[in-house]
Amino acid sequence: MLNSFKKSFKILKNNTIFVQPILLFMLTILSILLFLSGRILPVYSQILLLISFSLLFVAFCSGWLYINKLGVISYNENDTAAEISEKSIRNFKKFFEGVGINFVKLLITVILLMSIYFLVMYGLTKFCLHYFGMPEIINDFRKIAQASSQAEILNITNNIPYSDMLVFMKWVLVIYPAAVLTGFFFVITFAALSFEETSLIKVYGRAIKFFFKNILSCIFIIIVLKIIYFIINIVSVFLGVNTISLFIITMLITIYLNYYILLVFCFYYDKTKNNSNNGTEFIG
Image (cartoon, rainbow, N blue to C red; front, top):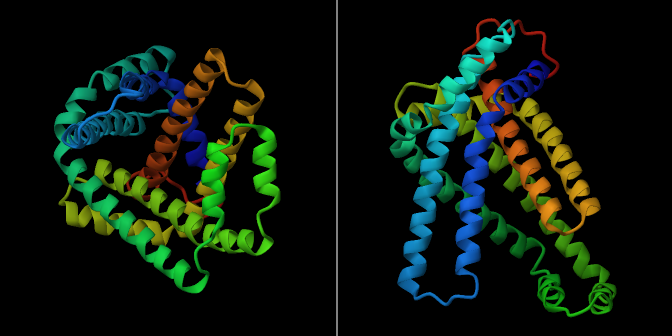
């Protein structure tokens, strides 16, 4: 598994061009949201906008996941600089080919996974409500969001009862790990969808089997990725809020997301498809 960390980093370094689609997608969505900021749209327009965003997201992911898959399959550590550049450009040019190949099956998969996610969250919410009760701290969050000064925020936080904070922490300890593991399973499913040339039912079955068979490795990868994300958040705090820092953080997040996908793809590919895997990994 440790080999997957190193390999995915090298693939990303060799294919920095892969970051461009996700950066363009984020900037496009941000531009649309800024344009719509402050505008009151009819309900039917909001629904149409949501559907359009969803289809755009699926189309983007279809091509983006496809070129990352090609980057993993075509990787060879003995390639020369010229060969690396040639492969990178050749794979990148197949973005729209990936949209055509993956769009329908990815759309079905996203709908299914989101349904599963909402069911899991609904079940956990019911569980927490039954055993812990509703944390009143949620109302305090609303007050904090509406606060007009730092002093007002401190006054609100200092008056939160310890018992309510304890209830909220119980909710977090139940829901957050479940949400993280569910999200990671979704990425495993995207990997299976990309590398397995079979029916969707079999793809989902193989994704489930892979996830639970390698659960310890998955948890280890999640922890490492969370540490990296935490470091990015620390960097954002030190940079402050300005145009340059926003650009830097946006770049860091896009690179992080691309590394996330490549890491999971390499992990799945090395475990299931790459016969050169010699089994000398740290976990799993």
